[in-house]
Image (cartoon, rainbow, N blue to C red; front, side, top):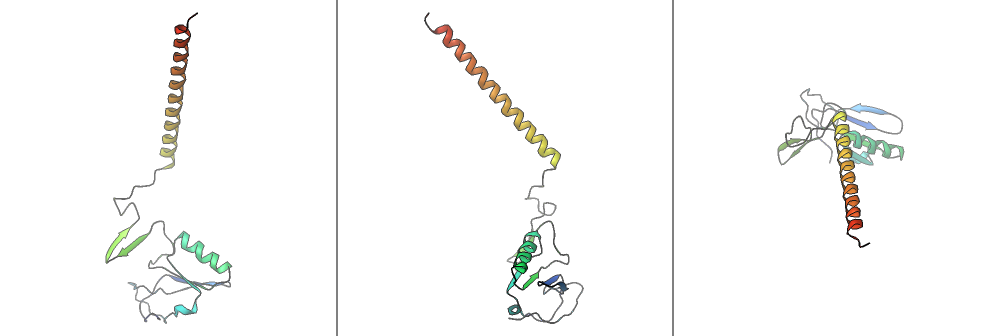
Length: 144
């Protein structure tokens, strides 16, 4: 089923020879018109322009496949995913969705790791001390 004419944005057609941007099939506020794209003209259609989708498309191209890479965004690629399901819009961006935790900065990760190591060392030291105390008690309790 070929898409209808309409406002397009952010689509890239990739082949072994070149990458050329063409309009997207998603409605755009820019209202650009373009010819319909026949999906059957491609071996594979990849939906999304994030890192994973780009790696998939690139691997398929290197394997000799013709690939249509489409995305609903005006910008090629992004750091976070967004989605629409049953008319509800959602986002995997922690800045937009309070139910998603923010990435922990590197310095905090290192501090947490050091704290965990210190706690483990303290536990090991306490276990060693307990073992030494038990050995001492056994020596004193053993008949001579």
